[in-house]
Length: 308
Image 1 (spheres, one colour):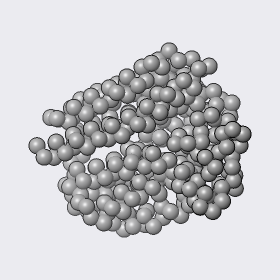
Image 2 (cartoon, rainbow, N blue to C red; image 1 turned 90 degrees about the horizontal axis):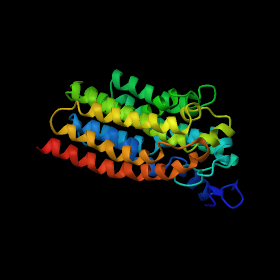
Image 3 (tube, helix red, strand yellow; image 1 turned 30 degrees about the vertical axis):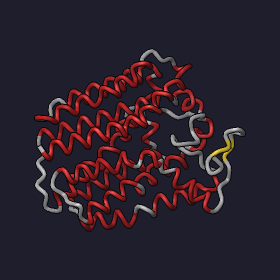
């Protein structure tokens, strides 16, 4: 953990050389890369986009540079609260030494630029607008002055935008390149369900940090509602997501069942108090791995829908 934090001393360790590079990469949350690349790629291909240059540029962009911008900026400007947060220092987020803050910010800003430029050239006005909204949401969540993450409920909306906007961009990019994209009930139901799932997931993630955020002077949906009410809010979002997905035609309705594991995951914490909020971390860790299982099942459902 030398590139992240010395847990025994509770103080960040200054990284050097390759260790510094590993720390910057770690700040992009490699475990979560697929959560933004998959929605883009799936949306692009499902509406008729091919394995062309736009697909690969977009997939790589949403895999690494996008996440480096999102999480790198977050780790720099959340330093004070991260130091106090016992769950930081691993796959759930590194604790960046101040010496690497400048490097992280430069990497977070410069790495996406060539990809953004290429996607703007390859796309249309509509896809450019979607990309602009997506990038704004990523920066606004953590950047000083804006700090949407400290605006309760807007924090959940913005966080969900981080994951849904790549899918919307995939649709807009494919349409701009000649694909026939029908913005019908199926597409709307999918996006609404995905968005509600994202809001619920963000809210549940905030539960474990209620005490740490309050001590760090950070407001969130969790600090405002409290642990118990926030878990209930997350549960309601998941159920609403499943309801939206039931509006999909044909075999697409099966996707509604995919929210049930998330409902089961949060259910044990419906009575959680603020004093024991850290217990929700076990559920959050399950959530991180549950996403991979869900992604696999979504892929199978997509293949079934396309082939049959």
